[in-house]
Image (tube, rainbow, N blue to C red; front, side):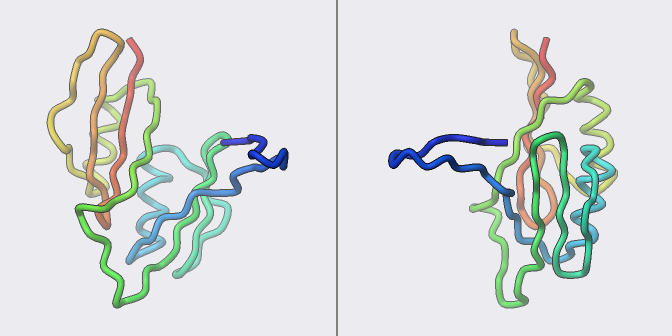
Length: 125
């Protein structure tokens, strides 16, 4: 996903991106069925998923931790069919955060998913 050399000349590779979820298996299913991620590991507390070079880790949030709608993560994906992807994600519990926008460069949509996380979708023109 991201390989770079930092200011001290040390080569760094991003290992994964982490999201906190109340229900890890449900969140893993969301990414698998809605965005075609493969699931490498999935337990009640931890999951590791992959889509191309992107590795996404899901961790069960402690019961006292509440994910706030105002401070979610945002993952953005390029898709081949935004309407089909929106339909799949809505069937899995996501909500459109505004309408699908038809820009000159392509279609864009923002979706609010479980536990307040956001998914951005982009279909090139």
